[in-house]
Length: 368
Ligand SMILES: CC(=O)SCCNC(=O)CCNC(=O)[C@H](O)C(C)(C)COP(=O)(O)OP(=O)(O)OC[C@H]1O[C@@H](n2cnc3c(N)ncnc32)[C@H](O)[C@@H]1OP(=O)(O)O
Ligand SMILES: O=C([O-])CC(=O)C(=O)O
Image (cartoon, rainbow, N blue to C red):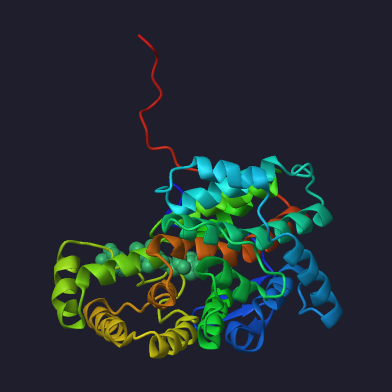
């Protein structure tokens, strides 16, 4: 029987020029630039341009992209009508997945897979997704959606649309840092999903819809929500060790810990941990930080496992004021950049993705 690589663990399925995850040096680069430098020195819009085009934008290129993005922030009426027909209790990831589908169904160029048409679709989704996330957050609280503001950058507008005001600069910066860190991560499950769908020569919206579904799961992006649910269950730093011992004895997966590629710690965690600190300072977050530290120390002692990016991102979004079910949709609004860069890369050198399997079912037999 052939060697089985469960979960494709360690299998190299293709090349990519978009990002490199190096678990030995705990590093992550986007198009060659260390993500930590991008997170501290660049706006999220510049990082999006870099992922899509391979180089950071000149001021003129950025201005052109910014103008096109700001012009497409407003949700089309037919999309709002359909979203309002969903139950207000629907999970925001379901709302978001539906929104991507509807944007596709209303795009006359949906089936045009040329690089130019797909670049326009990527920008359209990039511009519209914050409005969808803010719509779901406000609807959960019985609030009407706000019109987007074209005088604000991507992160400021996202926060304004959600909360009705632009928060303190420290909050904006921490939020933007999370977007940069979440933007791209090589062949993770959702990106790979988008490449599988693209490999059949399906359309970009279908690939993104499938990727949203893959990201929703708690072993992937859904972990940022699960981390917050876990913190709520533990309640207090003093209970963390006892809670962990019971959870591990019950064979539970501890959310926000472990990673398929990083075994010595996630390259993005120190930067996001600093952002969480900055938010906690101005949003009364010391108790949450204490719980964060105590559980991380206990998990290292018990299993030798380190936190992944979802571990600091969850509490940071909580302290910023987002409801827990909106955390993974924020991840989508960031990862749309990486997904669409990968869809373009897949199409540029396409081969249908169709692995083989080893059959273990009943031996061949005849109907009697
Ligand atoms: C942005 C992101 O998507 S980052 C990932 C977010 N996901 C999570 O935080 C969910 C919790 N983590 C996990 O479930 C896993 O660590 C994964 C899915 C991320 C990676 O899984 P894999 O690479 O398949 O590692 P695998 O599951 O083989 O783990 C190896 C061992 O560590 C254990 N382990 C790994 N992560 C955890 C965890 N979070 N809690 C408890 N045990 C764990 C496994 O049970 C396994 O133990 P065993 O050898 O005794 O059976
Ligand atoms: O790479 C992975 O498997 C998961 C991850 O951290 C990401 O998608 O950001």
